Image (cartoon, helix red, strand yellow):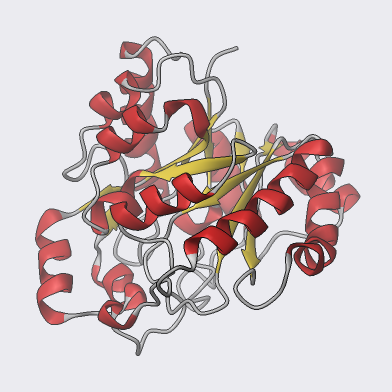
Amino acid sequence: MTVRIGANPICWSNDDMQELGEDISLATCLREASSVGFQGMEMGHKFPRQAAALKDVLSPFGLSFVSGWYSSELLRRDAQAELRALRPHLDLLKAMGCTALVFAETSNAIHGNRDKPLSQRPVMPVGGWQEFGRQMTEVAAATLAEGVRLTYHHHMGTVVQSEADIDAFMASTGPEVHLLLDTGHATFAGADPVALARRYRGRIGHVHTKDVRAAMMAESRARDWSFLESVVQGVFTVPGDGMIDFAAVFRELTGYADWVVLEAEQDPKKANPLVYTTKGYAHLVRVLTAAGLR
């Protein structure tokens, strides 16, 4: 099995700032994604959340359903309460044949608040990783028993943001917990996505690919922008249009045979989604082929 390339509709319509791309219909998003060559799509806020309706929406465009984001609150509730809250989403993923769950702790996150600078993002209390990891492993073991692996999404503005956070998270969780490697969030947080790919290859269960504009990242840090302000100003772009060495990342993922998702949120009025996703898709094909993954 070779890697399949999917897309996230956030390239067309932003989930956290829905005014970005609100005029772009779901049909336009799916038609353009299919024309570019993507094989699947992740969940977006314009998608139906019933399996039959979701299949009806995707099938005319020949697109599979890849997975969908879930916001957890394990810092506020225990694993069993989390699993009860997760149940509708997990059942949808299972009905759609998904094998990966995109999972992120957001109970104290600031990534959706344009007025909160990233310097105010949450940090784990001293001694908090062990219990958080135990609860996370319990949730992951339960979803894995149902055929869906939990892939944890480190993310700007959340409690798992930096390279140190990712290392602490991985050390505190069991093998049932997989890592979603997001190249853009890693780079923006000051981590090296190549090193993360090398270090955690055996536990990487999903990959999001976005690139970073170095000058905009430096300005965001200097001016202490919020995550959403950084997005609006253009910190992210598609693979091949920024500073990340994707060829080096994928050389470290030998044998990886799951989805690689292009997910570069930008303002579509500044960065035409069809133009940019076409560019990003072509770059992914080149580097994945060179790495022997396609």
